[in-house]
Length: 351
Ligand code: PLP
Ligand code: COI
Image (tube, rainbow, N blue to C red; front, top):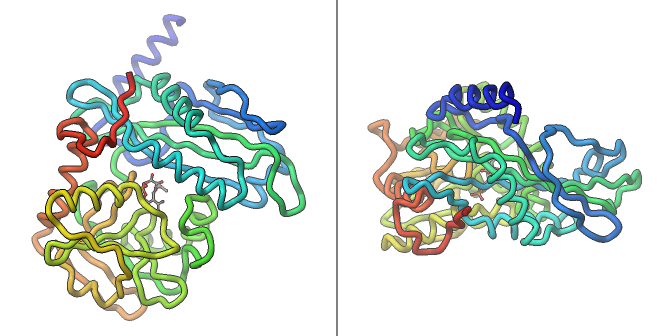
């Protein structure tokens, strides 16, 4: 490597304020790509370009043949790099592929891409103790040209990474959210249960309005009856009551891998787990509520405003996260950072 380039890289590293990273795009050294053409996946390619050369008629651009994933890698106290539950993200990406008639990505390819891109960008993995992590963003798009509404014959799978801080800038501090009834994120028989770009496009109006009105996120209700809690922007919803971990059962929410993990942790802590419909009025009876997801981790909620009728539900009266949410958060983070025994076998260690 040229000395000037090396100096530039060292300067970048010295300038990263690991403890105050936002959740956002961060330019790194490399990303990886793989093309599906003529009925087969090609070889994984490593590139330093942040751009994609794409056909003007690619189905991703016109008909939304696009799915993405989000997972995290953590530097542990022991210096090891752990990736959390990548197999679940690989499975979910293929559910999304199936739901939008895209070519699935073989788990082995997903794994190779993930390992390669993490290793190639090792210098961007946040140090232990900073609270930051390396966010891994796989995406799959229809790259073949079609003008009629039909699935592409060619696909492009890519993965980029970047160091991130908490999704909600408050971190593990309680936030306020807003129930909306004049927007839906996903229809019951639509694509809410898979991770496709269109779901996020349809959530933008509600979520930007909620930010402008001073809220961290929107709480969507079920689109059919508007009676039950669905999910909380880019995160699932959970509540605590009488030693129970309660989370919505709904066909239009994304099955969160964080939520799945918290259910196991809660059971292991001796709590009962209920996955069922949650009527909005039940919000008044909960001891603690929170949002959970890869980006959100656990974000405690202190206030939920029902935008239409002005009703408010208040939690965290002392301004801090509740005791159960705190225990769940510490356990999950402890496992991810290698501080707690990985008794469920969730971590994959990058050698
Ligand atoms: N719900 C939505 C809509 C999301 O975008 C995410 C983020 O991936 C989640 C829930 C949380 O899922 P996970 O815990 O797998 O990141
Ligand atoms: C994640 O939690 O990984 C997400 O994908 C949320 C995101 C849409 C920012």
